[in-house]
Amino acid sequence: MTTTSLARYATSHGYMSEKSQKDYIKSAIERGILPQNADSIAEVVSLTAPDDPDEPIQFWQLYSILGKRPIVRIVRDFYTRVYQDEAWFTSVFENVGPMYHHVNTQAAMWIDVMGGGPFYHGAEYRLSLHHTHNALQLMNDKGAQRWSELMRKTLDSPYDFMETDPRIRISINTFLAHFMVKYAREFDFENRSYFGNTNGPYVRG
Ligand code: HEM
Ligand code: HEM
Image 1 (tube, protein in one colour):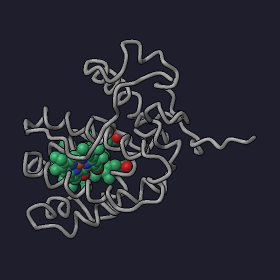
Image 2 (tube, helix red, strand yellow):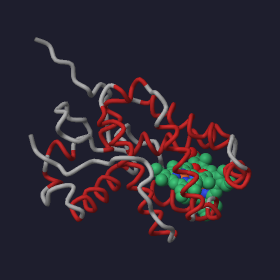
Image 3 (cartoon, rainbow, N blue to C red):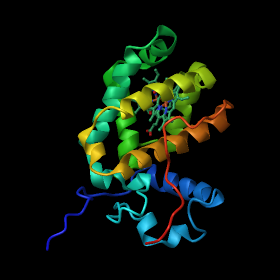
C-alpha cells in the first residue's frame, strides 16, 4: 500500500523562523497548549507537518504542505481587499508602496516563518521598525480590527488547498494570532480572538 504524505515541499529555516518558533513554543507552554518538553519533541520542532490528523500542524510546518503558491495567493487576496478599503485604512499602505510591494514583503515573511527558507532578511527588527515607523497610525484597536476583518474574510474564501486538511486553517490562525498578540502588547491595543480556532492542547498519538 502506498501512503501519500501531506508534506510535499522541501523546507529550511529562514531569517525569522527559529526565533518565531522559540517564542511561540515558550508562550504555548505557558498557556498549557504545548508540554514542558515541547522543544525536544521531534514532531513539534520539525519543519515537516505530521500526517497524523490528531497532531496539530505548527505554523513553521505550513510551507511543507503549501509551498509558495497558496501563500502568495492568500497574501495577494488580502491586499486586494486592503486596497479596496476605506481611505483612512488604505492610504497608510499606499503611502508605503503599490500593492505588489506589500504582497512581496508580506509573502516573504510568511514563507520564511512557515519553513520555506531565508526570504525575510531583517527579520523581527525590520518588521518592528516598519510597523512603528510606517504603520503606527493603524497600530491600534480600530486598525487591528479592520486588518483582522479583511484577513479573516480572505481566509474564509473557498481555497481548495485549505480543504485538504482542516488543520491548515487552524495553523494559519495560530500564526496570525501569535503575531497579533505581540503587537497588541507592543502597541497597547486590545487583543481579540479574530481569526477563528487556534491549535488546541498537544496530545501525543
Ligand atoms: C516608505 C518607507 C519604506 C519602504 C518602502 C521600505 C521598504 C523596505 C524594503 C523593500 C526592504 C527590503 C529591502 C531588500 O529586500 O533589499 C526594507 C528593509 C528594511 N527596512 Fe524599510 N522601508 C521603508 C521605511 C523604513 C523605515 C522608516 C525604517 C526604520 C526606521 C526601515 C527599516 C528597515 C530595515 C531595518 C530593513 C531590513 C534591512 C536588511 O535586512 O538589510 N524601513 N524596507
Ligand atoms: C494591527 C494590525 C496590523 C496593522 C494595522 C498592520 C499594518 C501594516 C502596514 C500599514 C504595513 C506597511 C508598512 C511597511 O511595510 O513599511 C505593514 C507591513 C507589514 N506587516 Fe503589518 N499590520 C498589522 C499586523 C500584522 C501581523 C499580525 C503581521 C504578521 C503576521 C504583519 C506583518 C507585516 C509584514 C511582514 C509587513 C511588511 C514589512 C516590510 O516591508 O518588511 N502585520 N503592516
